Image 1 (spheres, rainbow, N blue to C red):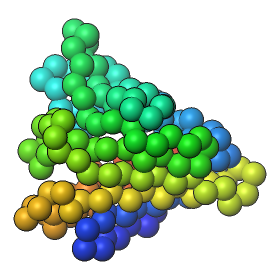
Image 2 (image 1 turned 60 degrees about the vertical axis):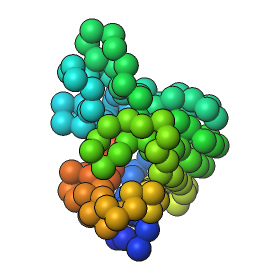
Image 3 (image 1 turned 45 degrees about the vertical axis):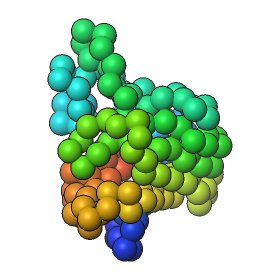
Image 4 (image 1 turned 135 degrees about the vertical axis):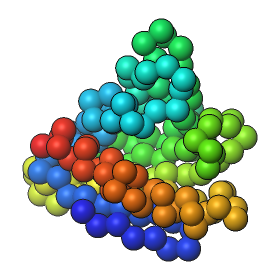
Length: 155
């Protein structure tokens, strides 16, 4: 697991022992690996996280009572190589349809059953909170920890 930050990007990567296609499919199956008990923004307990794998598709959580809470929108979906999505959660962890930060995830085949997953989160939209948010995203509970959870599921 590697992670670092430039001025406006939170970057994390991990190498998984899985084929590129399997890595991509597992990543977009958020409910399989996303820690919904600790990483949700809705008022109710989240029971599912959904990544609609098409341009314009939603990324959202669903609570036990059926209510849904958006996280963002898919901008580009290029299986099994790349995802680009609009993470629309503010620094207060609230969904805002007018707020936009890009997250790009690349799946790079290193061998038939070995894939490097690189995640770049553009944080400049957070303005004067960009440095703080970059730090939050790079904490163990942020993108590095989320990629670790993903790796445990895909392997």
